Image (cartoon, rainbow, N blue to C red; front, side, top):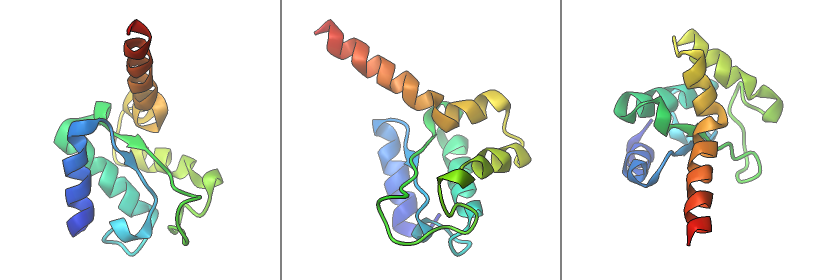
Length: 113
């Protein structure tokens, strides 16, 4: 991750799990899947895998990352995390269960009001 992108992610960590987006500008490798994996790895090193998630932005920008050209390639993130030694339960959290946990908490608190 570079400059302002690293700052934005690290600053945002205090508000909840960040959704790692597939925007070519975030990375140091020139817009490839390794940039996304580096970002996830960095967040997990800072605050742990319970606080990372995917937030793909296939509709929100022009361009693609090599290796993540469309939604059918999202499995490559899981495979990349396995190659980096992430445990399967941590990969599941990062892939969506962290967001479900947060949403369940938010909905429960809203319902209690």
